[in-house]
Amino acid sequence: MSCNEDRVCDGVSDCQATPKYRKVLLKISGEAFMDASVGYGIDASTVFEIADQLAEVHQMGIRLAVIVGGGNIFRGSSTSARDIDPVTADFMGMLATVINALALQDALEKTGVNTRVQTAINMQSVAEPYIRRRAIRHQEKGRVVIFAAGTGNPYFTTDTAAALRALEIGAEVILKATKVDGVYDKDPFKCPEAKMFKKLSYLDVLNMELEVMDATAISLCMDNGLPIVVFNLFKKGNLKRIIMGEEVGTTVFYNS
Image 1 (cartoon, rainbow, N blue to C red):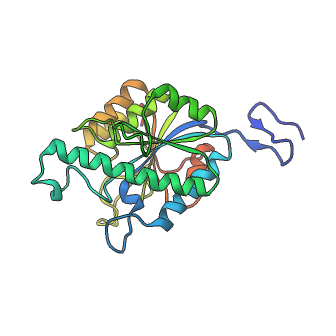
Image 2 (cartoon, rainbow, N blue to C red; image 1 turned 135 degrees about the vertical axis):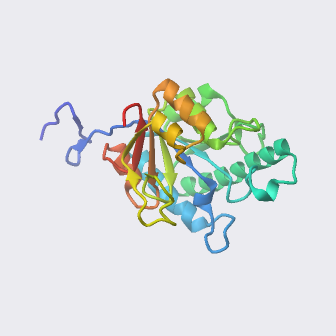
Image 3 (spheres, rainbow, N blue to C red; image 1 turned 60 degrees about the horizontal axis):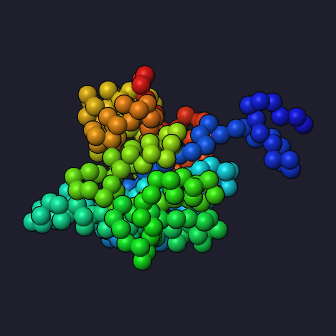
């Protein structure tokens, strides 16, 4: 069997379709790691399920970076932080993301995937400092890079950090992992009649105040033409399907 220009062949198995994306940044909220039975903390089995999906696309030769939130441990903007100085609370939230990054690193390496955690706050005992060229080199060597501690600055969310890091490393798309199938006009958990959008423009998201990413992150993506795909990470195979070009979830780009 010969391969045409739109397909690649591994020399052993039948030809497989060429991935649409070869370099991606995956944004995972801290809540994705949470033990739902208690409403906080880290559920190891869930982290391993996520790691299995990442390992699957990594084995395809995809250059994969991940940025994690920390809302399952501490969120600087939460009501629990209201009596804490806002800057201090934001730094506490950044440290929470490091805990999640280390948990994901452990799970990935137990699946045989080489990783590096890079943090925007210097803590060399547990992770590398974020250095753009080093992050890119790790990906070239086939390692999954996990970014933690947001941008290292208060008042900026991990959404903004995701947009920033994606642009810095030359990612082709941001994949925002959620527990719902995409972006809805209403909360689908509260409103059964909620409508899911398949495609949206950046301006649609801003004008309709949809909860995709914060306005700073959306504007940064819009200014640089970086698409965003919002999808349900907990439907097995969704991540791979997006990588291969299937229409999964909601895509945010210039034309809706």
